[in-house]
Image (cartoon, rainbow, N blue to C red; front, side):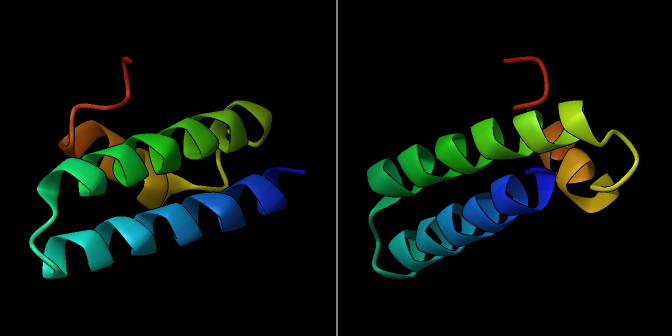
Length: 65
């Protein structure tokens, strides 16, 4: 299950990056927030497996949400 959550987060993060490239910052934030939600769930289930995602959450201020 954690890997499935990670995969969903990666897809959402990619869609957020695509939205930025298209100049759609509003939708990019929606996609990034969804990615954060999936990564938080994955990290809760497998705390040491997603260090890069955890760092992204910290850097973007999404870890505490």
